[in-house]
Length: 104
Image (tube, rainbow, N blue to C red; front, side):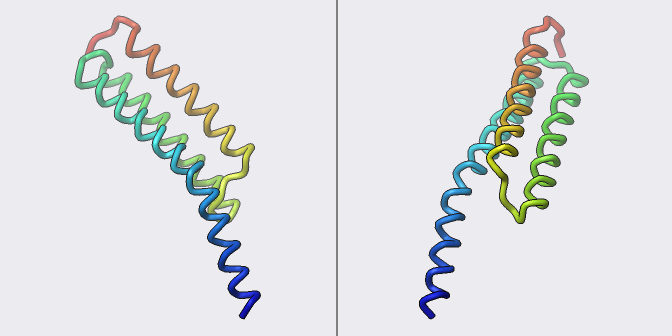
């Protein structure tokens, strides 16, 4: 029974540590989606630009899901770094296209 209790506590501790990092990635992706939608509504993005940016967001989400599936539902530090780098690039793309002068 003592081993079972220890295993449960260890599992909860790992979940508590992994959850904030994953939540930050999810929140950032949601923010980028909202940024794209706002650009489309305001006319700063054309429909074609918004479709490309949303496609990039879907690709990042698929890659993240694939990485998590390979590691039993968790992301390693290097995988988190890779996702953040891709989100950084996506954010630069959003900003560049919102300020390129094309109107939707």
